[in-house]
Image 1 (cartoon, one colour):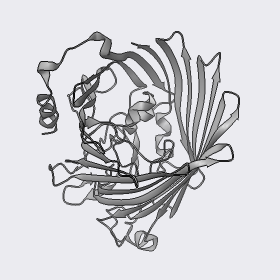
Image 2: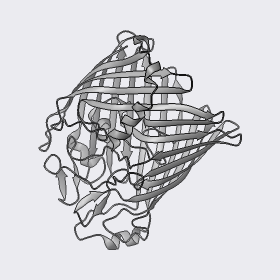
Image 3: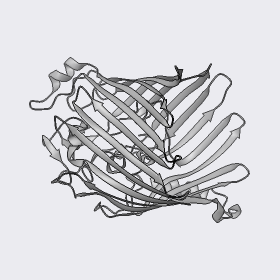
Image 4: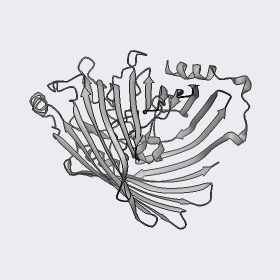
Length: 421
């Protein structure tokens, strides 16, 4: 059905006026290879080995703009080569296929496959409930691939008092979550690390116009400060719940309400964001098989530290609500979450050699979980078209069941070569 939805977008295009010109075609060819730093009995030693050819085409007509962007992929790591638009598997990863038009002077509409994002966090997300590709993020693909595409309609209104954005996704778009297919994870049912021996096949909502998602944002700039309110009605983006009937993980219903502020402060930029996660499947917090409601908080600051050196830091907090009920409902032997989970992040970026060389380090550290995740990266522009990249994804923790601790055996380094045109 989703393929049919995208195909209908193509049928609506004014093909008789479509004049293909190579000058309007852009993209890149990317070769990337990586290896694990330690043995993982549930995965291959090779973490990534693939070639991508991304083609990006935009055409403006009198009343509509067409955007097409997709990757032709040759992936040597995964055993699943079936073409799947939602999972991004197979020979084609379709990133964008949409139409943009303006029915009125104060209204924009974009329909089709598109990359959506909002919120103020740097690689931390509270009110951004659009799909993420965590597998790409952890194996060494470029950071842009963290954002998975949505098949949606986005309507933006521009009244004088604010900007209003509404996003309707007719059928639930889940994260490309850690399933065990490429990355090993903590399996609470087995009580151990698992991977290809226990791939998660989740029960996902998939009824068109019944299992829909609706996201909204109202934003306004007041004296240089960006203020926003957010709302979301849909589902947990990764299958953190459990369907007792099928015995499989599931994404259950979720509402999110939040707000953010972003602006200048003492030579830098600060951001504050919070969100209330209303877990509609377990509002009392006493169902061990469903996620509790949560409060999430984020405080961040970024500034230039020296010439060609920028730094940023964030403090992130998850508060599990109805904690006593949660503890009382846990089955014997089940690992218990902390009531409060704290995460600190630091990003450092240095430009060198007339900005041809970019060295960066992004660090996650959780003092409550006692685990960490390091993302070192070095990029060098050989020419305006050629770029070479070296990087790593380094995980560690004292326990196997914490978020970053479970990923320790997935630590990897990678190298990439890209030609842009």
